[in-house]
Length: 98
Image (cartoon, rainbow, N blue to C red; front, side):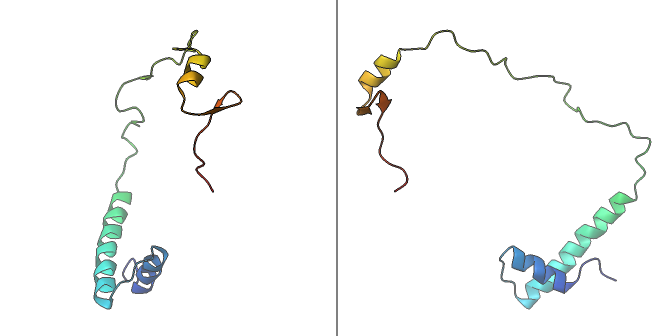
């Protein structure tokens, strides 16, 4: 008995909004069946003596520490003075949503 039927392939194709010909459905059924067969073979492998490897790189905390900046690179007033348009202490930009 195949691991996947052509009806299931049609359903999956419909969910993915794919329009498949009968030939493509047969080919996809065969291909997906082969993939599922390989996965079922992998499920049969005994991994009870294999150590877990949740940390394969050996790295820890490769990101820099997030520290607040005591000073701004420039003052708020300098930013507002250089903006094309301002309104009530805010930079005015063109509307994105109409």
